[in-house]
Amino acid sequence: MPISGVLPVIPTPFLDGRFDPASFGRLLDHMLPGVDGYTLAGSTGEAPSLTTAERKDIISRAVEMTPDDKTVVVGVSHTSSAEAADLSRHAQALGAAGVLCCAPYYYANQPDGILAFLAEVDAALEIDLVLYDNPVTTKTTLRAEWPVGWADELAHLTAVKLTDHDLTKIPVWKEAGLNVLAGDDPILFQFLAAGVDGVMVIAPAVLPESFAAVWSAIQAGETESALDTFSREIAPFIHAFGIGDEIATTKTLLADLGIFASDELLAPLRPVDPSRRAQLRQAYELGRTAAHERRVAAAA
Image (cartoon, rainbow, N blue to C red; front, side, top):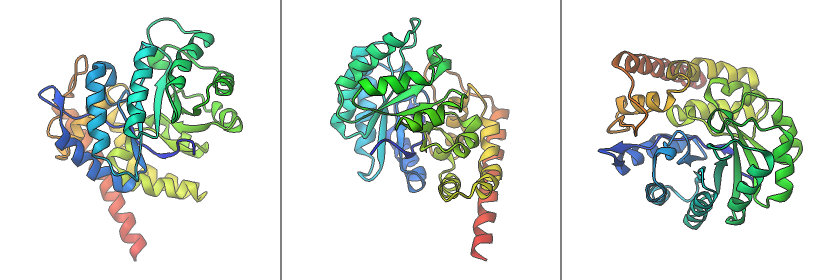
């Protein structure tokens, strides 16, 4: 089955510059009851700031801590196709359900060059390859027809994570048999209303129970109910955590909640200031209060 469902991208907890497994375990305890799994070592996980050896170590330890019934997708994006393929083999050997890979992000890209890069990753795989359509990072805007053609040549390309805001790509890819995964929190509900097959964003990791209620309503065709819950319980957090600094703000909130021992970031990312921390906690509590009210109303 192609990759689908609620698979939040998660930040990597660090303590004194090293992966913090205790904090990671608390994050799993917090989010796993409300999600289908998670996406590890992506942009949110600060993978571009890690060496390949560090990435492998974190992935190995994270997968070992994860129940077998949860789906893990591993980010393998890299400027080197050989390194991306090596990371893919490593993730596959650990039992990952799929890997997530964007176009290389240094030299200018052309369609045939992207295909050649992905072909090396695809050749290393027996599990699913999720293409990461991320024009901000890759400086490349994928045309809708490119992944459709690539899927004919790549045996394991079954899904696309869409971070581009061009939602007209969704029906094109779905008609071609590719699953589409929502990839950007600021327009998350637009993705949901457009009929994506799953999500790879931050919000479900922070507010898993609320997002599970939204996802259930969307799957049942209850869009108005889903929007009501989303607006009350999830939107305050998304508005507060910002665009471009969401890794730092998410870590700040998780540290404030006691889930992470530290909001430590790898260079060049920098922590947020104390006033921002208070805003994030207020937004989180607004969502939690609304979720409590929903549960009380449902039980009445």
